Length: 135
Image 1: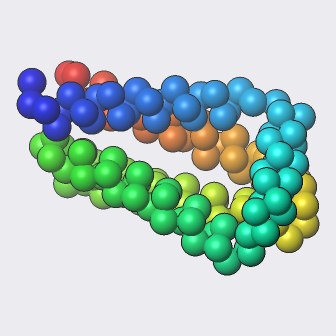
Image 2: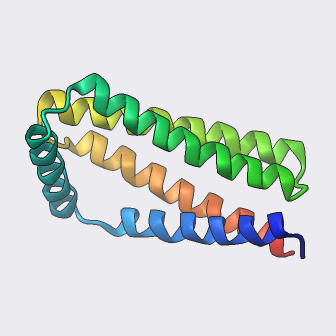
């Protein structure tokens, strides 16, 4: 097996596991994490733009690495394009939730459900890529 394929498999399984944990998190847990995040942001005196920029850069880098791994694993271009499109959607959802939390202060049921759907789709994406790479 090529090193890129092995790394893609590991990254896919990590992506799947993390998103499953996000998917099964209760509303109370998400609200608790949100309050901890807001407290930490207030303690460090972080402005909204700084938090959004750092979240975007980190998420973008991780997404680019994953897309790069799928590319170097030799997957079909339409699969790589699908992975990239899904991760762009995840970046958008992440920014929407972050802006809502920073401005409103809590996680509404609408955004909670959006994060659940996104986490489920990302878990399925991770599982799908892992299966494609193995098979």
